[in-house]
Length: 197
Image 1 (cartoon, one colour):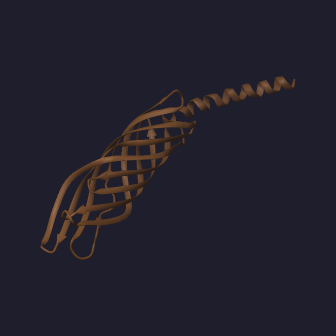
Image 2: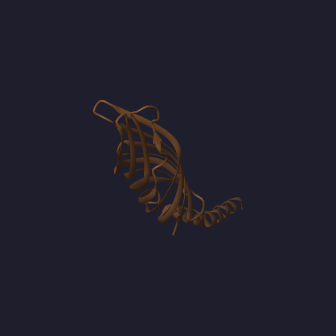
Image 3: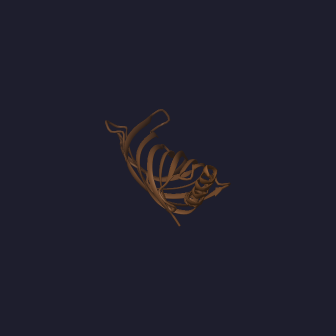
C-alpha cells in the first residue's frame, strides 16, 4: 500500500510538474520586444593634439528599446540575435580652463549575438557580443576658440547577464555591458523587461 501511495504521488507530481516545466522552458524561446533602463558611466578621452589628451567622465541614466529572437536547443542551450536603439547616456564635460572637451553621445544603435544556458526552467545565464554605434557631438574649446566635431563612431559591445522568466511570455533581466564609440567608453548596469510572442 505504501509503494502504491508513493507511485501515485510521483505520477501526480509528473502530471502537474511536467507541463509546468514544458511551459516554462519556452519562456526564453522565440521573438521578443523589450525596454531597459541603465545606470551608465561614460568616459571620453579626446586627443587635442598628438601630445595632449583630455579626459572627462560622468555617470547618469539611459533608456534603450530592443527586439530580437532566441532559440533554445537541447532544452538548455540558447543562441539569439538582438538589435537595440537608445541614447548614448550622459554628456561628458572635462570642465576647467582650455583645452576643454564636452561630448554629447546622441542616438545609438547596436546589433549583438548572445549565447547562454538555461540553468532552471525560469533562469537563463548568458553572454553577449556585438557592435554598437553612436552619434557624437563634441565641442573642443581651446585658447584660440572653439571647434566642433559631429560624427558617428562605432565599436565593440559586450556583456553578461541573467534573465528570469516571470511567465511564459514575459521575462526580467539584469546585465552588465560595455561599449566603445570612438573615443567614448561606457559601462552600464541594466535592468530590462521583455515580452515574447
